[in-house]
Length: 429
Image (cartoon, rainbow, N blue to C red; front, side, top):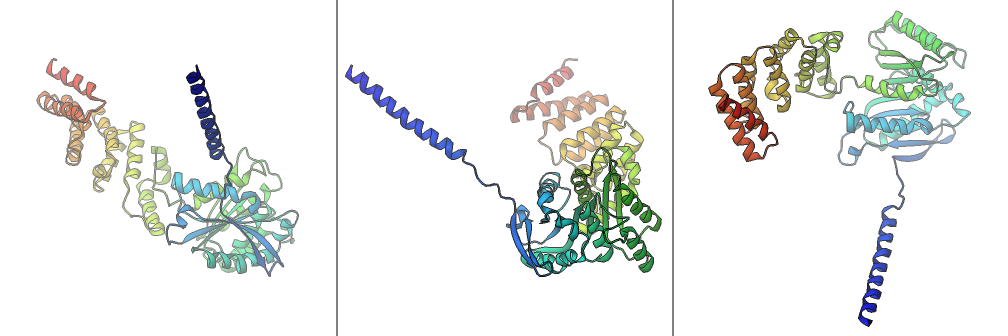
């Protein structure tokens, strides 16, 4: 009895200790930690006569290398900085539609922001103090973009008009006022006079501006600007105007920054034209070659067509069941060594389409191209067997089916049963 009581006490003690340890471990694991995104500084400004709060986000690759980065400057950083960071992370780590870039948020406060965005002093601060500080402190390239919403959007457009050298790209959401600015001078008129004075070939920049269809008082100004640009057609200005359906004044900055950046980095991602309609609307092969040459020039990528680009077009023809266009692509891309550069698993969609269209010989020719590099592929040998059967050559079909089964057994392939069943059908018709 004493031994039993002793064991019970010992077990209770052990469980007590272990329970305390478990609780302690759980508390440690669930302890809240600060989620830090970037840095924040108070930058003294002689121009403004105050210190201005600035937020800075550096991409993850910044600390592990020595390359330099373009910079996106976001006006009203107190509201929109985190949105810019989110886009930067999404574009680079997930979508790969832009290079890494630094995000700088310029904080502002009400009601002073309205005065700042109608005062050249604020642009002086950005050019003569903030940009200089960022370029001296961080590894930056000469490439800069600016984004603003509402009054800040109009300010971004005015910076393009009055100081086009400062930023390479200007993105403006619901820019206001444009037709009647706070100073009494129309920004649209400022641009019209500049184009008249300097000519249509001097304004070398990027402009993306957008407004919702529900913004009376704002859409009139953007409409005037759009009409001026269509009439004058500045030769070197890359611009786009968008009316966003279903949004409102407060929500336009989120869609505008996303699509503005995507348009600015239009030639960064590998080209994908996933439908024949997209291919035709883009301009066909002339556009495809232009895109790749531009991408190579701007970002250092190879100028030749890339496998994914070619496959997207071929797949578009397959989905449209357009064998004529399919053959055109295959003939065009043959000189690019398309099949041998393509991901192996994607080639089966192409060969299947040949077989479906009674061209098994063409499918077999592609398989033979792949055989040297994929001689141990059970799937490839099995696919060749299917083609030989389509060609009524059961002897060769039997040989590659047997090879497929042997490889599948050795590799413990999940498709072994299927391969064995197809082999049995040939052996016992």
